[in-house]
Amino acid sequence: HYSSVHVAARESQVSELLVQVNDARATIEAERSRLAKTLAPRLWMPQPLVQRMLGSHEKSIDVLDVLSARLTVTRAGFTALPVDDRLDDEVPAPVPLTAVA
Image (cartoon, one colour):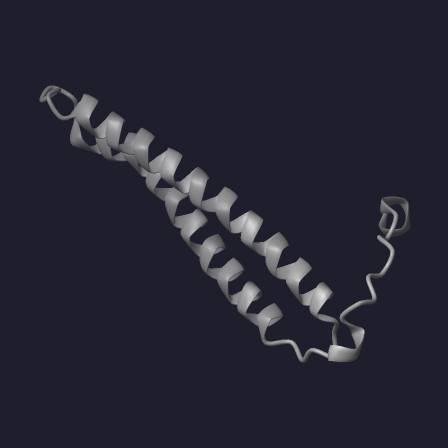
């Protein structure tokens, strides 16, 4: 069983990552949209080139969507951990970064 402090800390960390992923996705989606609007009136530009230019943004969005889904499942996993209420007040000391290197 885990302390509620541990569970809340892990949920918070994953939530922070989700915000970063969602912000990155929104930025890339906005860039893709601007690029699509810029390229739309250029009838002379070959469609395969347009698709390739937009495709790089779409691939990045797809990767971020998968990452977001994985983080959502991870957060749910931490939420589902069994909590021992007796451990609520015990906050463990942080692990020094040199210990995990």
